[in-house]
Image 1 (tube, rainbow, N blue to C red):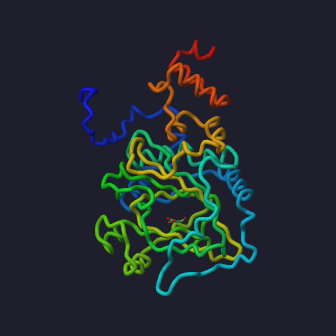
Image 2: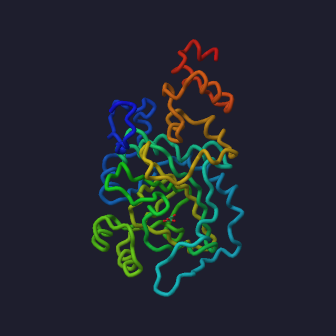
Image 3: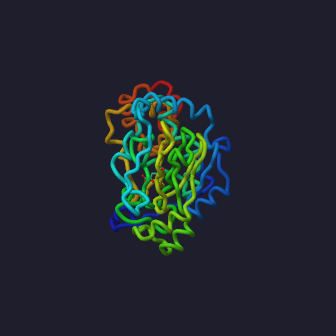
Length: 337
Ligand SMILES: O=C(O)CCC(=O)C(=O)O
């Protein structure tokens, strides 16, 4: 098509081409296998225990305790506000203690949702060569602060203005990262596999009316798992939050959502809008591959010119931009830039 042709073009997300794989994304960053991908595509959910090491989780959990531990209610007794006949509902108090990237904690906390193994898994699940992080937030829940029981729902409502595509590459992969042990009495997410929701509601249905909630609950499964686990689902999968009933209990998780780069159907946070938050904790410590997931072009991208390189370096003086300068200006110029 000639470059002056302004007719609208269809959105094309190219399938994964192994030659496009970034060299930094090597076998060391792969913590999943084909069975995980098959399970996610077929059932809509996959839970990978031990995805993160204890060393990766510990500093983040300590940051959560410092940021949120003070909100633990003194009485610590479970509360129940469910209306007669309902299995749960969403309400404001369930969503206290959620903050958006970049975080007030340390570098580990700020880079967790951009972990190379998470990026790799997102690419493989969506089957695309490049992904963007479109959601990353904390979530600290405490027994007695809210009744966390929800009804079964899909998350598409606040991730797209349309509905989930038939094409998985145009949907999303939504992760929950477990920073503490998440048992059934500590609010494990409950989910319904795609075959079961299709049988109860009809193939491809994304809304569940009150009269179907008990049937969905009857076949729900628990995503309970120890700290370090990763749960993957999507915007078209039925699930619900459940209540924390253990006296004095807490549940610390991080939510991370990925979509194919260039998929404008799906969105949640606008990173650029948080200009005054501590982006240096991400930018100064992330790899080009991780930064690309936030929309920062990789080294060698045509966006980088002598002017954009210089102004960006002025804006983020502590970011080591050597690979960016080198790719555009050549190694000799980069070392004197
Ligand atoms: O955090 C959870 O376990 C699930 C919460 C949930 O499903 C939601 O708020 O959409």
